Every structure is written in structure tokens, then in C-alpha cells.
Image 1: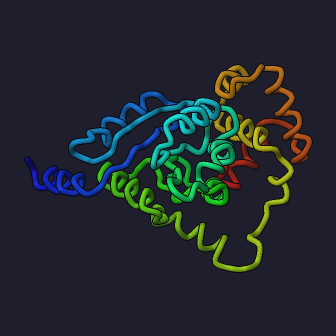
Image 2: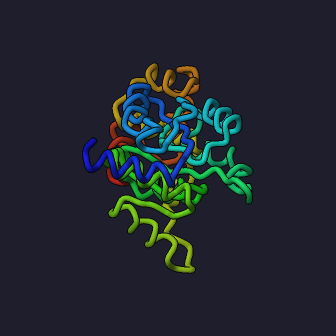
Image 3: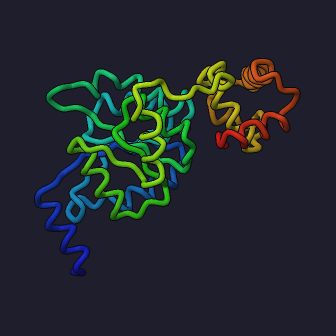
Amino acid sequence: MSEQTAHGARDAERRRARVVLVDDHRMFRTGVRAEIGDTDETGIEVVGEAADVDQAASVIAAVRPDVVLLDVHLPGGGGVEVLRRSTVLMSDPERPVRFLALSVSDAAEDVIGVIRGGARGYVTKTITGADLIDAIFRVAEGDAVFSPRLAGFVLDAFASTDAPPVDEDLDRLTQREREVLRLIARGYAYKEIAKQLFISVKTVESHVSAVLRKLQLSNRHELTRWATARRLV
């Protein structure tokens, strides 16, 4: 047994955590499970998975894990909607469910959004397996955990008693319109967006029209530039 493995085994004697993985990419969930899910070695047991908001809300309520690894961008309303539906579980004084955002996005808006929603931390998918395991246990124990650069976003937003700056243009959009905006800006076709969000192509078209109208933009190229300038992509 390597020194790192032996160290992990010793930690596992003292620490245990039940985890639910929420991410819409099955291969990513499989990779995370392989990285952290050897209970005997890491002390972490993956007790459920979900690929969208509805699945996540159901699984989390059913198994009541210690920690949920939560992607920010999910079909059905995003990570913020999962947090909203889990408010009662998060506030349980005896056995709270805690959330750690695990996302490819390092956009300030995403970080602040899920922290306001109740997540205890936010790390990006570039994190190592060992650091992710440590972050899970720290969040399970009530600590707040952030990738170093992302901590600055949170400090900037919450260190002052003044309200953080608000993007008035972005505030005009609903959560679903923001999801459609991001996918359009990433180059997805309407059919692909409909499949991602479990809605009809006609509904996608309606959301795009609403976004363009609210932001006073003319086409998806202008929309992409607008989103890129705000680091929403």
C-alpha cells in the first residue's frame, strides 16, 4: 500500500460521508464515482446520482446524503433550483444536507448564485481527486470550501454590508432564459437546447425571442458577444 493510500485508509477510519452526484454528463459522474467512491479507502459512499433537477430533488429527498456534489448547469432549472427545492433538508438542525458545487464554470455569477442558494462551497472540475475528497469531508463537517480564485468572488460579494453590484440587464431574465442564453452562446442548435432542457423547440424559440427583446439585441451573434463579455459562457 502506498503512503497516500495508507493515509487515506487512516482518514477513512475517522471520517465517513454519504454523497449524491448531480451532473448531466453520465461519463463525468462515472469518473467522479471511480475517483472518490471506494468506501474502504476514501470513507466516501456514493449513494445516488441524478442528471437533472427533478431527479436530483427526488434522490436527495429519498437518501438524505451528507453532501451533494452539484453541477451548476442542469436541465430543468440549474443547480440553484435544486438548492431551492432542498431548502428544508439543508436547514435540518439534526442532519443537514450540505451542497458542494462542482462545475466547469468559474463565472462569478454562477459562484455567487449557488452560494446565495445555500451551497457550502464551490470548486471547479480541474480539482484533483485527493482535494475533492478533502473538500467533501470539510463541507460535511460544516466548513466552507472554495477553489482559491473563486473565494475572491464570494468575499467581494459578501464582505460589505452594501448590496453587491447587480447586473440589471441579466436580472431581467428568468432562470430558464439564462439557461437558454448560455446554451445559445455556446453554439447549441435549438433542437440540442430543447433536448438538454427537456422542452420543445417552439419553447426554446420563445425563450430566445424573450431574451433578445429584454436585452435589446438583434440576433444570436450579438447575444453570444453579450454573454461572452459577461463571462456567462
